[in-house]
Length: 113
Length: 114
Image (cartoon, rainbow over all chains, first blue to last red; front, side):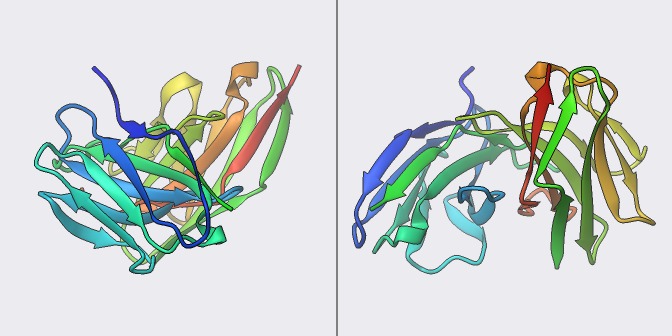
């Protein structure tokens, strides 16, 4: 049983470009969250998707958007990239029942030059 | 609002010594508390979590943590460090809902000396 898978593993973009990151949740999971982990920092919550809708959002600008598909997979889109967007982007999934464990993927390392 | 403070960004111990990683939280509601470990180039792995009930929580790899409401603390301990414990450790807090986001601390990098 594959866990949470993310693609690509590494990505290099230039300022002003747009990027799309992808996440496939663990089998049986229907809730997907995205986190940004800057170098030397803890992960920060971006948003959470359930039933193809954004359910919660952290303190991130509208340049950050997402989508969840009927198969529960998810995308994170970032427009007008800034140097400060360079970070490890982590996807996490869980089932929707209370107290279910959150499983994290290995992340996508985004470098903005 | 919720927040987590991890005291000590770097901790170094000798192999076989006690590991103590400190975490204090702030929460306006009864919290859920977590410890995660992150090895290089990997995602986060849950070590243990406190939700309700027994305040001493045992996790994987011999780690445990004690929820102390009076001290707003959730320190992580392991009696005897192994070389394989070298990693970054994150404390996190959330509200008591399945959909609540995790608020992470800034992490503590644990080095284990032979």
